[in-house]
Amino acid sequence: MLIFQTMLNKTVTIEISGEKKHTGILLDYGQDILVIYNGINFIYIPTLHVQNIRTNDILDEEIEVPTFTPYENENKLSYRKILQHARGQFVEMYVSGTLSLHGYVTAIMNNYFVFYSPVYKTVYIPMYHMKWLIPYPNDRTPYSMERERLPVSPSVIPLTRTFEEQLQKFIGDIVVFDLGVNPYKVGLLNQIKDHFAEIVIGKGESLLLNLQHIKTVHSPKQL
Figure 1 (cartoon, rainbow, N blue to C red):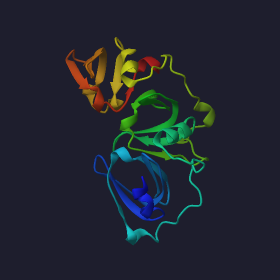
Figure 2 (cartoon, helix red, strand yellow):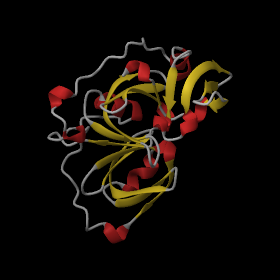
Figure 3 (cartoon, rainbow, N blue to C red):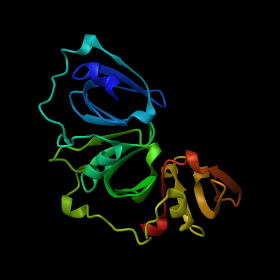
Figure 4 (spheres, rainbow, N blue to C red):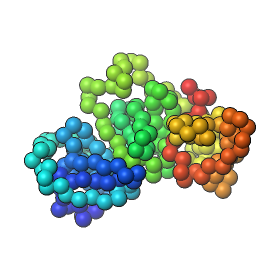
């Protein structure tokens, strides 16, 4: 991604899928991820979701270039390596412009990863749906909880290689897709077939959901 070389240490504005924007100093980049600093947070953005990026010279003097980044020891930065660094470290993660999670990554599989949230507990997230990640400062915890109240709670369900295979393990159970923001994404999982999930929602109506558009899944079974 040498195309970003000329933008290093300059203030840029990045537009992300979902009409969201971030402005900050471009500190680093890898084959599939960008790192910017907005004066408060370090923001890690997979290039998959970058709609466009442009320099913002007007703000160059307003943000001071930091002397370090949370994951500065990486020689070859990549999205997967950032997730590996986030294992066991508190982060704020967005899977859309409105759906955010606070907690930490517990496992990384082929095309999804597992996230532990004090609110939702074990959450499964397809790799291609994370929009951006913000590491917590060392002295902060999610919801200002005491650290001893934030243990990693291992999933009682063994992990499989792919997201679709993992969903198969929830057949016959109640599942919550996309954090339950849409009531039509909460129900009994009947089957997974041809990249669609069939669920039965509260009033008994059967619904088919395209797996490619499912951003997260968790189950009350694991609470």
